[in-house]
Length: 515
Image (tube, rainbow, N blue to C red; front, side, top):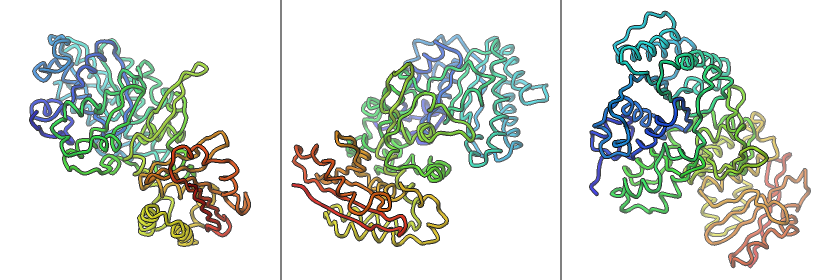
């Protein structure tokens, strides 16, 4: 296979097909959706190819056969069918006031009027939208198509200001309610965005949408599968470690085929460097602030549980931590089960990029001095490689001693019991180490198991004001946490770490190595 151009940032189907770019065929998904239904909704994180898929739908429904030569839909679609397409996108710019949203909506309506050769006479945006749908059908002699990209962005951009976010939500709800009332004039509707706002809050006037977000048939609708990398991008794989690519970027799952984030893969092939490409461009400060303000227990983030209702519980002022992390792409579905008449999900980090980068960001938010944090993290890796436990004790002790008193006083996160263990965990996770927090055994739950350099580190955290001195190591021994590892023939280290909330310091650090 010859090398082609990498479609980095290209979201136009025609440009990719005509410009000599690599293309992962999603036309089969498009054909199936149009053939089997009418109203759809899809939630996926940013930079997963939603806009490109919408453009694929638009070209298919417009009957542009030449663009689909050699693709899955070529010999399935009736190319005599041509529908007028109305496209709305809220991905560009930021609306900070309700007036900004109103102007954005009118801008979208003007663009569609020009594209379709229709001039609205209705004075309101909702009236113009409805008129546009009706007249498009009359003019084309075929029912219209409505495609909405980034349907929720005006709300997400303002989640830090609840009053403005609610105003944005209400304005969008009024616009989307037009779609249901226009059913007789529509052939197909597809809305996509990052979040799944509850139908009551945003789609009360459009409750006939079929949500395919968690549908195993469409898990790979956005993103690249293993097969895609091996077949479509085969010329780009030379010189790259396939297992490393998988560990860094694969793993996103919506109960079907796992996928890679396209943005990551394309930037990797372009630069030949393993970096958190997606994380560096997609992480909202709002997410970090929410996790910090909620005193989130960091070791539990990579192993959360949720049901379908909780994952959909997303509204202004009412956003569960699980829903926020899952919908924004920082957690993905590991498994599902049907229990007592409902689906329940186990969530996990999708890959090393998210796991390591998110904990890096949280570590910076949980601590005071970025330069000191970086130095401590670098030192931690060196000490683990050398099994220098005296140095590790000094490092952790010095870390807590270096946090300014004013930072403690002004940051209530430092007052909750899990703060110390969360920071300690984040240091290990920010190095990308293989961690198992709160590992279960017949004897109980261990705070943290670390697998590194062919060795096992079993760590227990205690606050002396609550448990007394020596309790951490005593529990490690009494519970026999190391028993399950003895048969593996790996060197195992028991580490008991004790903090004092009053002294704001490490006051106990014991290590015992088992052969």
